[in-house]
Image 1 (cartoon, helix red, strand yellow):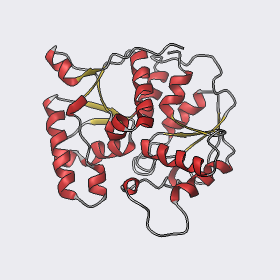
Image 2: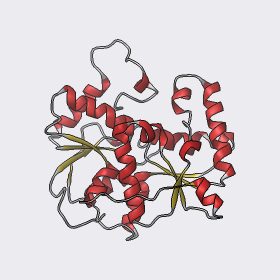
Image 3: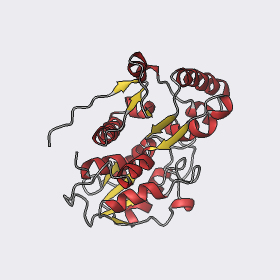
Image 4: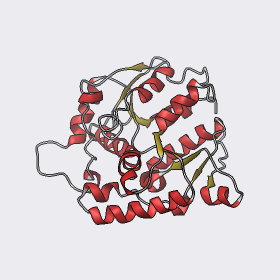
Length: 265
């Protein structure tokens, strides 16, 4: 399959032409700089382009939401970063934001309003589900994932923090795949080990790394694919799979990648 040529515009470009996109795609630090997550960013952009959704990115005007700063206790830095972003978003009169990172999702949705940044914020799995339900995106009948066992790891900031459980699972079921749940899932889910800015530091002394514990949950399901909806979860689960030397048998993929593979792109 030839690679789709993407036409990604910035908010500055839209403004210069006196236009306004329907969505601002908040790419996030991982989606911008992490080589693995860049593939998810691309997959999601391919889906948006195929569905003919008008969207834009901030490009170099986007900076970190401040989530890691607040989680590590640097409230001053968080407020500095947040205010910088809010000024840019409000300048462009942004109304709707979509992001593939639950950390960005949670911060933009729940923590920016008190600082003067109020937007409609949705996770990329919610938007993809809506595109399929409204017929703007169709899945090819190619049986890519038909009958394959897929388990979904709930990102903390998507599930327990914001009650988004249904959208990613509905998308897996649309693939004709067999969704197999881990023993700890949904409201009883277990963190991948990266939350609370643990991603950026060594873990405290204990008898097991959290991501190893969570990967064991996933391996118990006998699924061939671990689906995620978060760049940090993707990294932690991938590391867990490598720890057990199962990378040949088990793939860790974002929901956007699953849909992009199955969609008629």
